[in-house]
Image 1 (tube, rainbow, N blue to C red):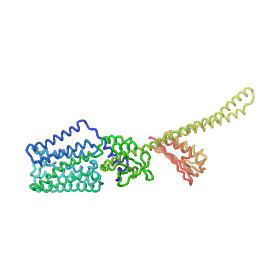
Image 2: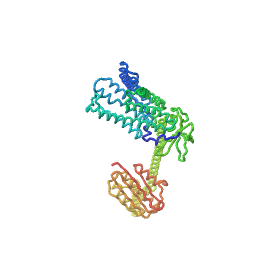
Image 3: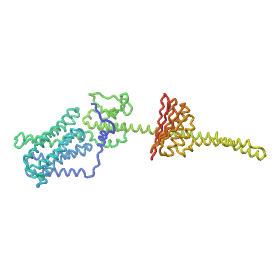
Image 4: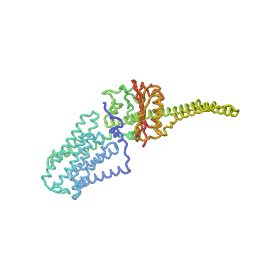
Amino acid sequence: MAGDAVAGPLNRRGAELVDRFAAPVRRRGFWPALWAVAVAAELGVLVPVVQRGAEPLEVIFRLIGGSFAACGLIAWRRRPDSRSGLLMTAAGFAFLLPELSRDQDGPFPQTVAAWLSDLWTVFFVPLLLTYLTGGRLRTLADRVLVAAVVVEIVVLSPLWLVFAADQPTLLLLFPDPRVAEAVDTVQRALYLAISVGTAAVVTARWRAASPPGRRAMLPSVAGALCLLLYAALLTVDLVGGGPRAEILLWVTACSVALVPLAFLAGLLRSRLARGGLAGLFGELHDMQPDRLQAALARVLGDPAFTIASAGPDGTFVDTGGRLVTLPGPGADRAVATVHRDGAQVAAMVYDRSLDDDPELVEAVGGAAAIALENRLLQAQSDARLAELQASRQRLVTAADAERRRIERNLHDGAQQRLVTLALQLSLIQRRIRDGHDATALVATASDELAASLTELRELARGIHPAALEQGLETALDGLVLRSAVPARLVAEPGPRPPRQVEFAAYFVASEALANAAKYAHASAVTVRLMRGDTVAVIEIADDGTGGADPAGGSGLRGLADRVEALGGRLRVSSPPDGGTVVTAELPWSS
């Protein structure tokens, strides 16, 4: 059997399935208190009829509420992931409440008894419709049927009591037997329609299900038949109906009393009741597929359970990297696929007997999807970390290279000139002391000093342009004027960015202008500066040969590292047919 386990990891449906398996922590005494209330309520409705020697049939009817409550409490505690136990418990208490009120004197308890006699169906109908979905309404038909039950209890029942003269209740305001009869007819017809509709939905799902799914739905089918029998008793006046009516009453009472046992047996038979599964699903946030596969295989009692990832060529490999051949129809093992964003990303291979619990297969698929998503996120995180480390290493390397360049320039340029200047000054001093003419030496020393100052200014400009103290626009204007390629600056008005943003924008423009002259052989360059409240954009466009590759050299890569270090982005558009546009977006906090 092949199926879709879940449509995408971490999607709302898959996450809901997995989140349900962690049992909520209850206060101490929670379950004993509920059991005490259930036992007291059942004794409260049973003791009076036994004391007055009621017919066995009435005793059985009064056992129905206790049956629902007891089975519901067991299922609720053993299966906290499913709301079916809660619905059964609520149906039991809703059955007991009007019976308790019926034995009390006074208009208020009689009002409760008459109004809420069918309250239990508000919980029983959803139980039938959602047994395989853990008590969760999924379709429009489910919601319509439950809404109809609510209308019958909240609207029609009290409306009937307003006109029912034979019911001494607090709601009797306008006694009118004809209106009461009309409302009662509508109420009975609606209840019959609800019962038939519920049975039809359950039957349709049973027919569409696989053989294991049909076995799992048997409690719902039995409950639907009981609901039809109960609706028939409410719809047709069977008083004085003879032996057939007596038989129908017995069949209905016994069936409704026993159907909670069928639901309880089905819930406890589910493999979701295994104690280790709830704890396992609570650890999914940091569990990888290989650990999940081993854990699920152990908990499900299926040593061959496999989670296979889908490859781009349509093949599947397990968590150990081995090729997996998916079983075909009729095999002892079944397959459920796992999807992400509409694409099949994995498959689960499991024992076919697990198909007896379709919700289990769906939930395990959600767990596998989350584990696969964890692995994907981890891989993406590792890739980002590696790129960040590489970027930092490039920045460190570039900084070291820049320091070596400054040291070399100082040693080979200004330092040598200053040493020469010192020697010349010493020679000038000696010649003056000896009374010789030192005019030529003074002129030479002056020229050497001017050259040294020029080199130091150029070196300082490379470290931190002094023009930036006057603003980015002024610095870019000086850069454009010194460009080896004819260039122009277009600066749009805007606020002044922080110093580090100006510094990065300046060096992006400087490197791009140098590349335009050195590699692109451009004849014209335009530098455009745009400044907003939280971002500065610098764009350098040339008409050169194009074909620049940011990954092919250290210049553009270094600029990208510098920009990304500030949280910005560098884009390079350089088609082979000519022209290069370098754009840097540099954000900052206002």
